Amino acid sequence: MNLREERYARFALVREMMETPEILARFDPAVADEACRIVEQTKRLFLTGEGSSRIFPAKNLIYENLRRGGIWTIATDGARQAHEYRLQDFTVFAASNSGKTKEVISLFMKLAEENHPRRLGLTANKGVKLEEVSTQCYHLTCGPENAVAATKSVVEQALFYRALLAQAEGDDLLRVSRTEAAEAARHVLEMSIDPGLIEKLVAAPLIYFAGRNNGVAEELTLKTNEITRKKSDFLEGTYAVHGIEEVMDANEVMVVIDLFPAEMEKFQQVLAEKVGLTIIAIAAEPTIFPTIQIPTVPGYETVLQLLAGWNLLVEVGVAMGIDLDKPVRARKIGNEFQPG
Image (cartoon, rainbow, N blue to C red; front, side):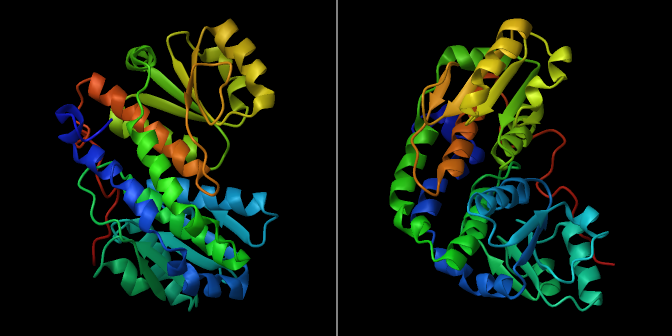
């Protein structure tokens, strides 16, 4: 996709996606300094929110934290389920692009009644309810989104959360690599994709996503519904070869994100050969499958994987003639808080 051709540029979704490289270029990890100090008081962090405001930002941070030995205890779940949890010893961080998400507001109101001292909010808007119910609220700089599907805000939320960990560890990688990451992001968003792969995806009744449980594949599963109006399913890790192959059809497609090298042959044998499934890989290195090969930038690998998935889905949506900005049923705010 690009902004030079009207078939792409006419959509707010594409224009907002294409703002992401500049968000990467200007992101200053120091914005998370204060929040990092608050989390350090407990070293226990609970991340919540709904939909895209939680999936990639929260799971990406959990993944990065565990890869580094787990300097904090970090967990995530949706805000409605979190009503049942004892969170007094956690710093609770809620992301809501709108600042009006009903489940999030309800949780923070409950915690406020319990005098919970560390309720942190992250939103793209000012003068919203999330500010009122948080003990401290932080604001994104990405600006408003007009498309229903959240894109640039998801990336900035993830950068903010990742900056918490970077500040705690004294890791300067996010700042040092941001210019390179911005250039790589622009390349990934604009790179051409084999039309034959797009045709396979257009024809598929269902698209599977597989890969690490770091939020990338799961977030793209959601974006598939919003952008292409197709059914999708997230198969974490090796779930794809542990039983679901029994009900897969050859006309379906699987997109594997940064697939574990040790599992490639198994996927080939079980899914490509036995089921007849088309498998498409998004990876930094060539694979045995048709591969959308992307650059790698330290600290930004998962962001670039996500952007490659956006590019793929936009190409599918455009090929199908879909209005990318306006799904028929989906709304920008899934469940908006109403006073009273």
